[in-house]
Image (cartoon, rainbow, N blue to C red; front, side, top):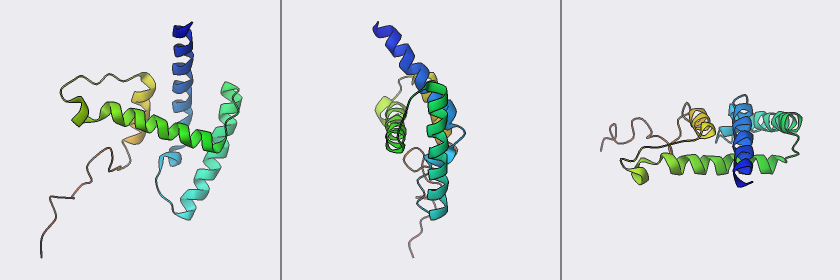
Length: 122
């Protein structure tokens, strides 16, 4: 019974990440008014998609909390300082979610280019 429940959860996570690929603006940290309005529209569309595909009724707050939790899980697993030389094994949804996070320059996942190298004291 436990294994079936885990498979259902993983299938839902895979489905959620595949739907999230159509709405990359939801992963943006920007607070610019135009981005906020596009996030709101994207959330409404994602809520509709989840209702149609999975039959679940989720609020915008639940979706944003889920995205935040997924970010935390993936960041913990891929933290090079914590893992050391161990091989990082990610689930299918975690790999797909990580590829969604990587294209944007996110200082918590990657070093900001030109931070310490270009600093000159005047």
